Image (cartoon, helix red, strand yellow):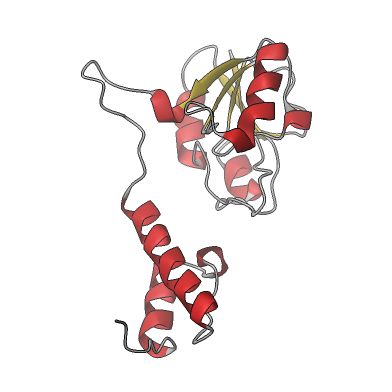
Length: 179
């Protein structure tokens, strides 16, 4: 079986990965399983980190049986009759992804949407965690600054890491009194 890790193409770019280089190496230790990674200049792990773990980097993942991503795949990049794992944002019939769902059905693609993977009790197994909550709170504060024109806060993805965010809030962000 060949598993492909696709390049994220959503705008704004997403640096998250479905498998780290270490996880790819562990998966590849299973007999008969190979992991291929599509190169990416924006991923949180460099192409070299994957290569250093023995993972093959290649542009064409059409030979893969399963394709793993994080966010929605652009319709033009879908490969017919493949199995994809990603957050499709289609389960609630979201209007903005109607064309994506139609293309998935038309191309006989098997979609495993992370949003609907549950345990026997119906509890989601892949959910947004602590950092997603922080990003949501950050976006709320950023939006307040834009609306009131009282301060500018960079997008979360512009920070290098969590400590960079903390130091920015501590040293540069001076919030006005809120009512």
